[in-house]
Length: 313
Image (tube, rainbow, N blue to C red):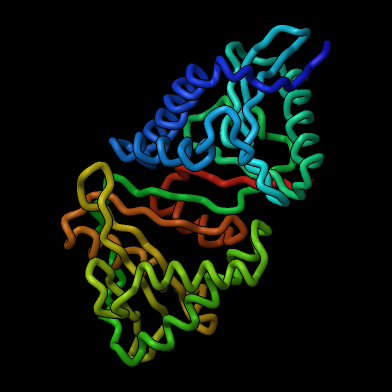
């Protein structure tokens, strides 16, 4: 068996682009991450960003997958430097395990040859084709998007945990701590340097909280037990598929108060506030290394709709 990756001929670029656009949209819709027209908009943004120069774009590589000189599918790679990204891989027939291994070996080799030290990919809920190519090859979840939908009707709220709006005075310390913590977690994924992570954290906080604690659509809370603060919650009002959607941007329990159920109490508070904003779904992002948090969210009914997986080459 021979397996090769061959650049896609320019005259096939338009038909490939139409097909990959449909795959990008379907994966996001089927997973529940972007169930409506926003899936179309996101797919178009990816294609436009990566292929501003059409088939001649240098930002990525579109390759045919040939097995014994017969094309069986295509793959699309972003190759910007040290961190390569597998945007799409698709076969027209089900590949055997040894064929999948051979294809992924060539993709990884190409990434290394262009200077990459890591290779990442998105694995969506329900996308068994991509997962079958990635599983067992040393990829680990770097970050996870999770979704709770519909919101459950719970009756077991922890009444002795007082969750109240954050004061302006408390916000100053929260902003500094949260920005630094996000930068540290982002750098720990290995995707970017700490300097770049710190810059990205500052940028995101500026976008999300331009007016601090008074920013419209953002709700910040502190949790206290017997008047002693035990944690914080940051909840954002967003739109998903044209309807209100809650998104947890930050949730933290002080180290001295962990393993006492306060994290769960904050999560239930997020559900209550999400209902008050008229939303029936709640999402969050968690770094893959935070296994305790992932376990809690799954116990509460969240499902993983998208995982960014990374492998060191």
